[in-house]
Image (cartoon, rainbow, N blue to C red; front, side):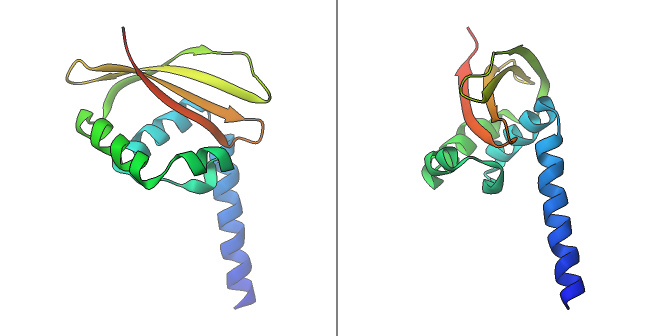
Length: 122
């Protein structure tokens, strides 16, 4: 039993490390899908983002982003300089129905998500 528990713990630690080591584009793609489906992995969030990403906010994002479907393109357009250890990555996201949004995805130095924001393309 201890061996099984140790193996399970190792798998959890490895999965967490893999998520933090993934590229910002891969992480942003994953999180866009999570927000579209409402399937949030709170272990990847900083405490402040976790607190702000309430059930109501997740439901609203799912309602607004879900109907757009899978993106046809998610392109990193800019990486801003880090501020207080937080690096913003700006993605242009195109969908099949000609909708385009910008997704600002912010990671801290430990790989935790320290910011999520969407804006309409202008």
